[in-house]
Length: 103
Figure 1 (cartoon, rainbow, N blue to C red):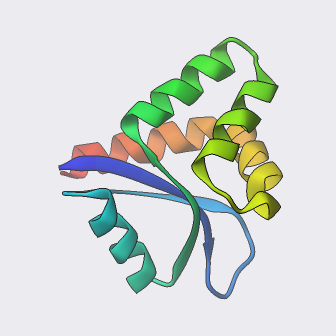
Figure 2: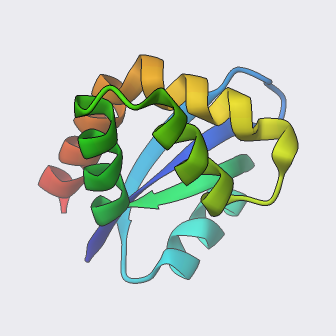
């Protein structure tokens, strides 16, 4: 099972949050999110989280934005997702670790 984390919001809320779970495939993970009325902006794999960790360690804010642009074509959420990753990366790592432990 692979661990995935999605950044987005629940259907009745516009508050940006992240949700982590394990699933066999990314497609299965995204189907679970839709079933729980979660609207994802981006879905990150463990390797993508590692890439963001390296970018943030290098203090390359523009690098985070460039990676987010590659993850989604929805330009309306690029700044929102970039800000969430920069400000809440510790939450992302904690949720991903917790999801891997539950597996």
